[in-house]
Image (cartoon, rainbow, N blue to C red; front, side):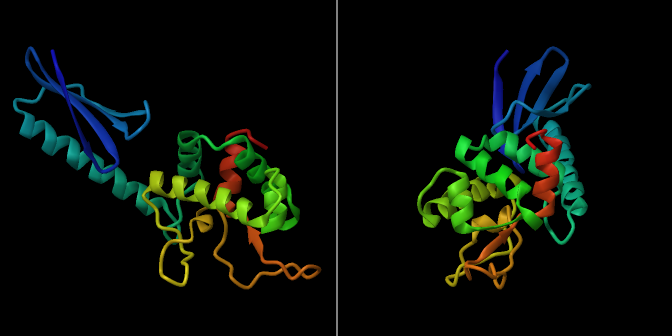
Length: 189
């Protein structure tokens, strides 16, 4: 038997013809997490595709409805963090951010937590992590650059443009509550 693979709605659908009809398995794209597995045979490939596409659309709609103000849930962040596999430096930054007073750190403090000398490198690494998480979750973070492009770090942090450290005047990033809960659920803290 040969399987055909198609991508739809963030899922990879593997389907094939067996004795008795078509069957499928659907995985979250890029993972081995099986979300949907059928227990019946379908007469045609088209019937199978209509069925599984509707299941995926329903699943995605339910997921979006659980979000508050469009922000992914802690459980979604758990899945995404597991999928993107942060580097050791990114993990160190996440942990430092979680344990910081009021979960606030400046860019330089984040950089130092990741063992980087310059705040720009820390921002780049945290932004890269945020972008990878956002793409996995099909989420556009609230923060934007002046040119309108996504400010990926705001996947992980609150979009708070006016929060400065009183002593240094440096901008402070506040860890998003959903990410903090995800880190706790992951046992990373």
